[in-house]
Image (cartoon, rainbow, N blue to C red; front, side, top):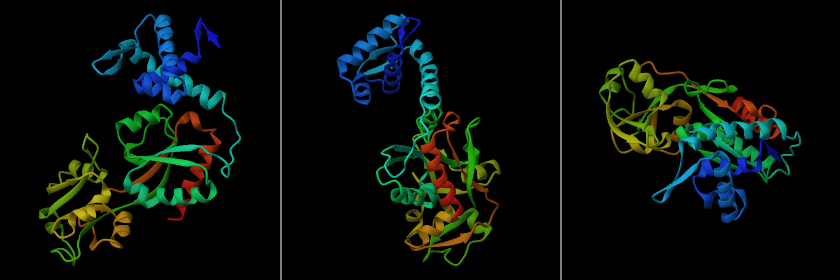
Length: 300
């Protein structure tokens, strides 16, 4: 189909090219040959009067025009994908759809794993990709490439639907043979050596760390680890302590030699929410998945 002399099929190729920055990878995703994708790029360059993608060293990079076009093309294709060509037919028992979920290891351990266990029974041919949160995942969410994002309410994305799944609070974990095995006071907590979780190359802080920072709570950070799930092992065999969401700490107390105590200072109220793209409201497959999240969250 053509519009204003442009073959609209070429925009699908351009969207993937700008996403992958690779003719080879774009060809794989589009299930086309590399020469076909190269020819499509050549036609796009002629139409827009711009290189769109240029080779710099061993990488391809978008030109200023390519960067300008990328979000507009993504938005247009999402409108077609989710509003115009969408079908109401969805059968979980036979669907081979691959769902994409963004969730922290905390959300995965507490809830998402239960959702996926139920999904395996109800939809044995479906597949799921679960990725940790971060700037790249937010970009993918905004582009419509994520089905469900589970995050804390502080990190919700404006203008997209959301639903609270469950609430939690913080607790303190320590080695069950260490100095604080029988309990920990406010003074001991503030003077102890702490392990904390940070995320990604950006070393993003947790909601707990942001809460403490905004209130001027100073601690001795002895160890930074790359996930919530690494915190129990970070305190075992030491007198270090860690602040961990209570539901998560309770799960690990069954498998690690740790003790869990109430947090002796004011901590944040943790609200886990799920979000989905606003253009996907009528996606029946997504509605099915959201229903599983709702049911499992209610059962917590």
